[in-house]
Length: 82
Image 1 (cartoon, rainbow, N blue to C red):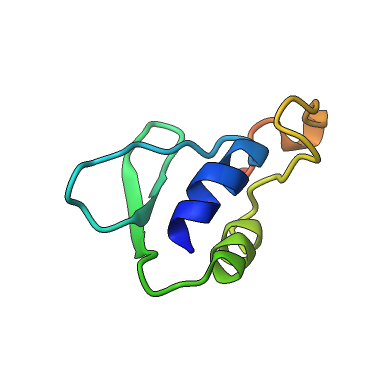
Image 2 (image 1 turned 90 degrees about the horizontal axis):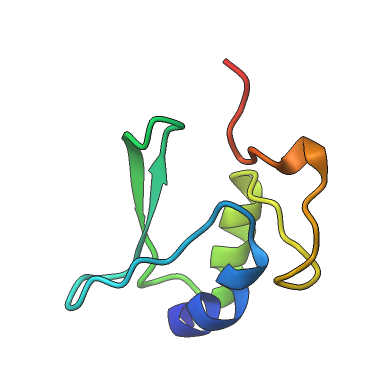
């Protein structure tokens, strides 16, 4: 499930990237605009659908295709104004 999300879904999300760490359990690491770690969310027990729902609830913009343009209002998504 997580592998399908990584290979098929991550390319559709703006400002979401994958870093492979051999031997590490998959987790979503949320960073501030200064790249400071905010939160870690384990993904091992989640389905692909649950991960997609979580990422969208967090405010990540999902494109129709990997090369689709991102609307101006979502350029910095999921960052929220201070």
